Image 1 (cartoon, rainbow, N blue to C red):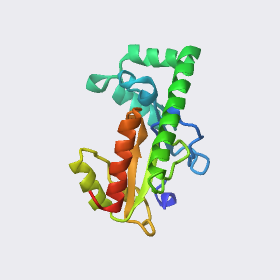
Image 2 (image 1 turned 120 degrees about the vertical axis):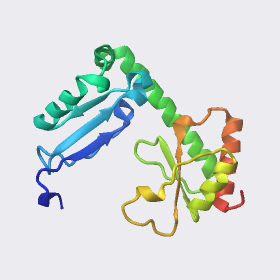
Image 3 (image 1 turned 60 degrees about the horizontal axis):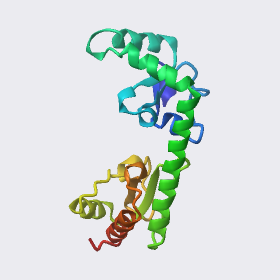
Image 4 (image 1 turned 180 degrees about the vertical axis):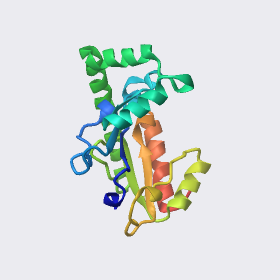
Length: 198
């Protein structure tokens, strides 16, 4: 389909940045000169460094630079230099790796708690999300919302319909507490949502 639109660009986003454990796939080799890659660092380095590194064809980069160099969209040079320094700092790299390991441990603890209640849990390669299949996603999300647990609908994130389930409960594990009692309570509520008994 993209062959029919030779002027179009493919935008690829890497929201995990240095938290990512795997090399993200890209269409860059198949579509040379037509892929714009965005790599975010604010999740790993903090919201104050809400900066994204952009790579791609020179023409697109120059257009972005023109828009972002003046006016209200101006990026702070101090923050850009701070991020550049942080990315070259061994101490910062070590802290990001330690935080990443802690998030991985937390995700596995969440998955273990959910599995101990008989739930199926799927973990992607970068395992900062836990996916729990559910027969009725809308009903489960509504029940969770009543319990003040808000999850984004996941059925719309798939290109093709999921088989055997209406969707998944998509649980962002970095936002969960480390307290074992809170985790157990959370797992109980998720199990009830999947069972449709909330």
